[in-house]
Amino acid sequence: MSLPESQWGRPEPVAGSASARRSAPPTPAASRVLEFQDLSSVPPSTLNWLIEGWQLTSGHGVVGGPEKACKTWFLLMKAIAVASGKPFLGEFAVPTRRKVLYISGEGGLDLIRDRAAHACRMYGISLADLDDWLYVTDQIAPVTSGAFKDGLRAAVAAHDPGLVIVDPAYVYLPAAGNAGDVFTMGGLLANLADVVGERALDVAHHFRKMDPGAEPGLTDLSQAGFREWAGHWVLLWHNEDPDPETGSFRLGVKVGSRRGFGRTRGLNVELGAFNELTLQHEGIPSWEVVKLEKGSNADEKKFLEAIKAGPAGSNKIKERTGFGAGKVGKLSKSCEASGYLTIETDGQRKLHTITVLGLHLITPDKPWEQGDY
Image 1 (cartoon, helix red, strand yellow):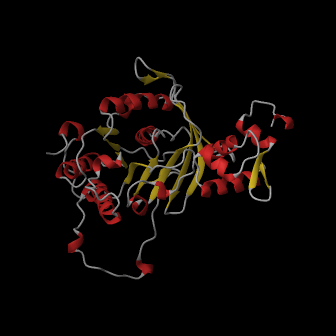
Image 2 (cartoon, rainbow, N blue to C red; image 1 turned 45 degrees about the vertical axis):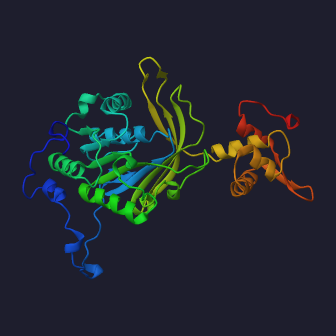
Image 3 (cartoon, rainbow, N blue to C red; image 1 turned 60 degrees about the vertical axis):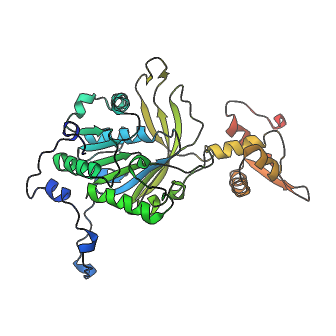
């Protein structure tokens, strides 16, 4: 069984065209012979931006985050920007309009359609403006199956996309109980990258369980192989507790690449109020990339809340926050350095006392006075 022609299309690539070269199946590893050459004979890299400052036109990577961190929304915003040529998030240039293949394994085509239509409002376009530029399927098949490989190769040959998105990874990667084996997972991811060829590839993936508000790294991606495989990455996390009712999210975003570019920023997302009758967001969504202000991290706020009532030792802070000793120690140092608290000893233990500055951080609208605590 292969993916349906009605969704992907199957015209043959023109011989010698870029699409024909890119869609050609890779030479099996067993038939290759190791070849060596002087580095001076290797042509220098030709690098082009898919989205300036965010992603190159080739290479594979991961978009990771915890539950409800807007991973699918983020990927849709990226897909629509590339497929329309509009600046990503209204700010970051897309030098060349390119076609996009979106492989969605969660929610069905109707959900993706509704979300994409809502996201288009921010870009000032309609879904019809993406016809012949953004192609979607919700069929599920393992990346090692003929259904997946043949269908994706046919779509790549037919449309010559600049970006391929797989959302989420766990639906399409048949780990078969080997999710912790870096060699098994790395092989599955490499298989996927081989089918896509020299194009930008994004795979959505989940984090392992981690403390809310903690700034993540590649080691927080669940399962093995992803951090070793990724050539670029976008990591999202909740910088503050989300408000699903109003569609308001305050996220952190960390962008990185083995090419060396990267940044950590805040991402203020307003999806609009959620209508519980239509089950859709209302209004025009907005995404704003902002500076990730020192002290806006939810961990620091939770930490300071735990000692707001008065001086507290580390054990009491651990009990109130659920944080481990290592995190409490790290937050103690960072908050003390920022002037949010003072640390004194009573001869046996260290006592943490919040400062007026720290109280402002927790409740910035209240005119705290020294005597309030």
